[in-house]
Amino acid sequence: MARPERERGVAQAWIELVGSDPEAWSALSVARARLPAARGLESLRRWRLVELGGSLPGAADLAACLHRSTQFYNPNKERCTVRNAPGDPAPVRAGEVALLVRERGGGRRRAAERWWAHETGEAVQVREAVAWALGFAAGVDGPAAAAELVALSDRRHGLLCNPFSQIPSLPGSGIPLPWITPGGEPGETWNAEEEEW
Amino acid sequence: MTAFPRVAVIQFPGVNCEAETLRALERVGLVAEVFRWTRPAGELRDFQAYVLPGGFSYQDRVRAGALAAKDPLVEVLHGELERGKPALGICNGAQVLVEAGLIPGGSGVELAVARNRMRGRTGYFSRWVYARVEPSPCVFTRELEPGTVLPLPVAHAEGRFVGSPGRVPALVRAGQTPLRYARHDGALATAFPEHPNGAEESVAAVCNPRGNVLAILPHPERAQDLGAVPRQMVGPWPEARSRAFDDGAGGAEAVDDAGPGLRLFEGLRRHLVEV
Figure 1 (cartoon, rainbow over the protein chains, first blue to last red):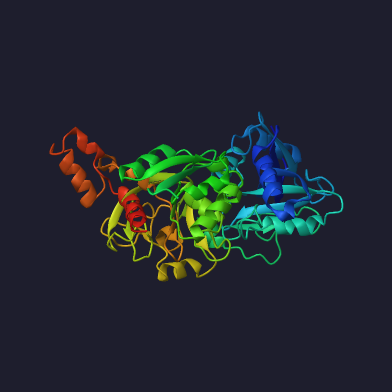
Figure 2: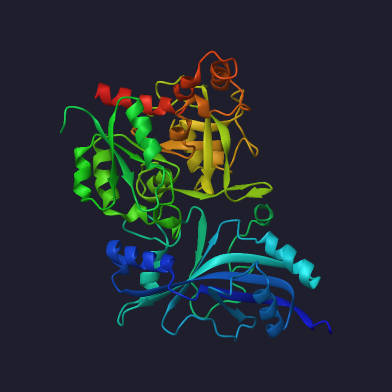
């Protein structure tokens, strides 16, 4: 079989449960019951967002690799949407507010990188974070409410990100690509040495 | 208020260390009962002390302890702790206290109990470690001489106390870190595996300024029996274990002799008797 054509770049795998996501349901339920900023929150969806950077194959081969590996997702219970160009649609719906939460200095998926190198002969960097989509009722200032909901500050404010161990990213418009990879977020300080742990 | 101190062992769904925690409290002479999340929160006020045991409250959804920290029980708990009642959060219980801003007890959330990360090692980790007692107003450790080394087990994936720059060192200076990971000789542990999770300043436990609330990552309730201390540990506790078992001096019943973890529960009992 001919070796697929490769190009340097970044791709995203948006991985979500096929059925209801208990984590998202619990977060929605608790937020609505306890947090003033969540009064207009109508829906909350969650993905494991995996970002691959390096010499990558085209979209179809990329999707096939992700599917047949056990390192990325379980196709029996999860589905994966691949995005490898800024114009590719993300599974976030129009009107929803997208949020990324990643661990400070963490998120590298070394085992997945080793699998990829073994399988394709290419070295890639694999990082994982959590993406959320927040849906608000009509008339609610979604981005403002989301900003209040995100960073934990006390029992009545914030839930989805503890700023002492995690970094939130609420893009103004569109879904960045890259979003996790260093350089994907203007102004962010990235501790490369720490990440190499 | 009853004449005899009663301790509530607060159980959120997913908490799974309530039975051994209850046993440890009863062994030191306290009256304790499991208080499940389904009970009216106001009934918590009838108790004189609280323990939040280990486990996986709400399946660790969002973050360990994040959802339980929003529970109405915790709101009532906050009011009672403000009145000076003692509370001990163990492992997941510690995560709840931190996510609720009850530890370190300033204003709001000031710390995270982040994912374990040591050089060359991440993820869940379970083993016995040594914890060194530090000078502190903590009611659970104040009867222990500073420098005392307790062998205790850890079992967690998120145990790394972190804060804004300088916050954790300030807690150490303020005496709000009553236990820090150490080597068997009492020297501070800085490397894996003696330091199991990468917590700043090797902190294993954090208390509030008043000392009545303690968040501890190691499991003292799993170290309540002398027979639980592993043979490969070093120091007075394993030596006592060895004398009791390996030398045949203690007999079979020595397995239930008081272990190092019970000292924290004894501290609670003494405090409750005093007040």
